[in-house]
Length: 266
Ligand code: URA
Ligand code: SF4
Image (cartoon, rainbow, N blue to C red):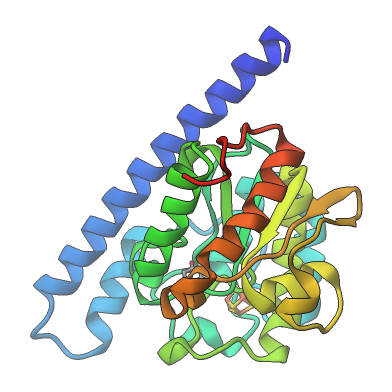
């Protein structure tokens, strides 16, 4: 890596760290806002959280259909533009129940992107993907397993808004929302994608299949290496499968040139 690239990437990492700090501060503020308005009518806390988390209205009007999402995603020249469009998006009914959209976390330093399914309650509250229990396990996979910092990888989801009661995304929600993710991937241009679970893996591979058919191998899709693995929420329910996930992660580490510890276990 030459010095210019190294410098550019180190700025990206420090930018990402600041973003995390800002996100944490936002999370803390929205939590406080929620708590302090506890006695208020139900709609109040949500309005308070929105006021601090949504960016100023600039850019195109809110996307209100799948066609709007496709057009705005295609037109977005930068990740900040894209983030703004996502934050305003009203293209599917999930916008009515979200506290805020959840765009991404991390940085492109390692050219590795994890893709989950959809925000849960903790992510909806903080605006940061994978911060709940499944998120802690993903963080352990990255830091303890791969031996790198969470800030060095990108983390995003198929859906940008939380499905109520953590239900699975519907086919309609996925088809409306995924142009945002596709453009996000294009703009980051990661070398390796690790889709987590069936929804993300099927979207990235572009076909219906079981996890058994998709994982344990490296797929090449559009010039990127794709290594599907289990969703951390599934691993929390089936801890015996963690060693299987670790095999997939080692495939990705091989492609990325991240040293694998001798014995293959951390
Ligand atoms: N599960 C996901 O798929 N994404 C998150 O952001 C959190 C939990
Ligand atoms: Fe828009 Fe996606 Fe949120 Fe639906 S889930 S409102 S398509 S950002």
